[in-house]
Length: 180
Image 1 (tube, helix red, strand yellow):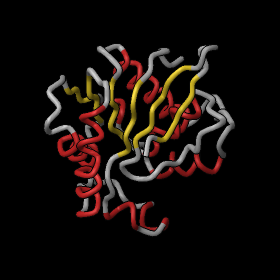
Image 2 (cartoon, rainbow, N blue to C red):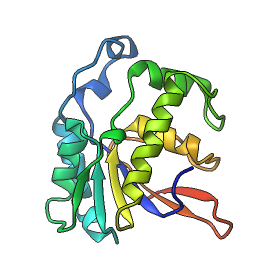
Image 3 (cartoon, one colour):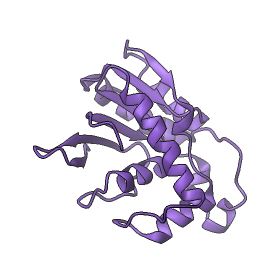
């Protein structure tokens, strides 16, 4: 279960890897940096991030998330934490999750399920800190979150540098809303 506490999520800025055809992504394992578009996206979100009522920033250890956070939060004077469990999944896990489809829980075993358990640990670690928190991570982490929260009114795949507000309704059910 995800700790019932509101938070903000931003997927990292664009990388050259995001632009590759699917077949080329299958062999990609290195940690990549933002491209010029990704850096511009992060700069464009800086004033938005500084306006959020956040108390903590938690970030994936991957370069693209670290760079996005560094650009967006350069003027934000609050604690920043690296959270290992917020790292991205492999392409094979992403394919398994996305082929399984939105709005359906994954089977209780396999690499995708292991990834989701890791994401749950990472999110709960972030939510144990003063909040609301801003989490800067990856598309696969967002997809896993949406699945774990059983969100039905929110598209699980989001664009680079897309901010999302996760909150609870009056019945303590999760809601997610894109903010720009």
